[in-house]
Length: 204
Ligand SMILES: [Zn+2]
Image (tube, rainbow, N blue to C red):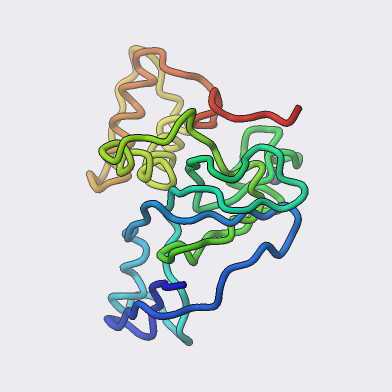
C-alpha cells in the first residue's frame, strides 16, 4: 500500500509501505476514503519538532471498514466510519466518566495518510454512519475526526450554555469549530461529550 512518510523537515514522500494488519483483537483495518494534513503535521514539516527517523504521517481519517478483530462488535466490514486521532476503548474508568480522550488504553493515530490504516480500540473509537455519505459530505465528516471534536471539547470545557458569552482566541480550524460548538451549545445543543453518540452501535 502507499502512504506519506516524513524523512526530515520539508521532505515528505509518498512511498510503498508494508500492508497493515490486525495486531490485537480490538483492532480494525479501514480503507481510507479521505485523510488530510493537520496543523500539527506542520510542526515537524517546518522543523519545529525533531524528526529523528522516517515516520508515517496523519491522524485525521474517515474510511470503509475492511476487517475487524475478534472483539470488535461495534463496526463491521463495509461500513463508512469516522475515527478519532486519540483512540479510546469506551469501557475503562476514564472513558466511563466521559473523558475518552484520556482513555487508559489510548493509542494515538499517526499513520493515516495511507491507503489502509490500523485503528486500535476500534470498538470505542469508530463511529459508523447510517449509510455511505455523499462525496460532498465527506470533508465535513473528516473534520469530526480531529478539529471539530477539539473545538467541541473546548466549548464543553468552557461550560458554554444558553446565554453565555464565549471568547475564542485564535480562528484557525479548531477555533472556528469552537465557534460552531459554542453556538450549538448556546442553543441548548446536544449534551454529553461524544459527538455522534446517537449513531454509536452498541454491542448486543
Ligand atoms: Zn478507555
